[in-house]
Image 1 (cartoon, helix red, strand yellow):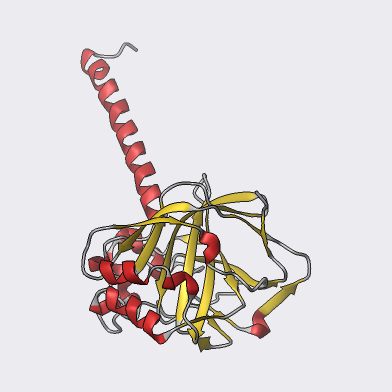
Image 2: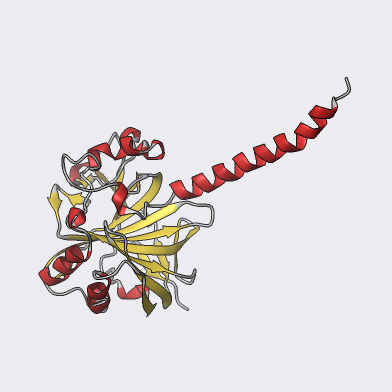
Length: 281
């Protein structure tokens, strides 16, 4: 049966519409894998209409915050942890990298601007994208919550996310944060990005070589799941002044920016020994 003139004219339009929808879907998928930048869209205040218990209701694309079964953070309880004797190493390939400092309102973020710094886990390379701090810590160990948690967020070329988490208690000043003190003070007074210069991520000392590992999610909307978490068992130190500085830099509703603990839902948490190595130049 021959196509009418109108059908012939509409075919390119239909194909163009399909292409547009496909591109929109790809863009949306890319956005969903990232943490929300605009802190005005949610907060951490208990009982607030935009608080953690309501994140999944605020936007359709945030529904995983409510319905997800692999949500983070969780408590790393020793009796639930399976010890793995065979090593599954994190190979660090960190190099001095240009970075900028951003005040996202709900946290302070150090964004790495090129792809020079990477890690490798189980043969997959993940590029270091950004680092940010939560106070108090989001993850707990045996029910104990610490004073600060650093997330080093990595992403592979096919969109997989791997986060290294480090926990800190009040004590001696943290050397890495000490290098950023003046810039954090400055960014608390502006919404503009600040050039942090060339920073070597190796300065984030990962002295502990044992890690908890589990599958979870981003801890802020859209709470994307499928995130590979590695939490260092070694507890570092940070001064009270440094924690206060990070809290004062963000907006009032995010001075304490830790998401409540999420349900385990039968997930396995593994403890790996001697996992971290640096690949020589």
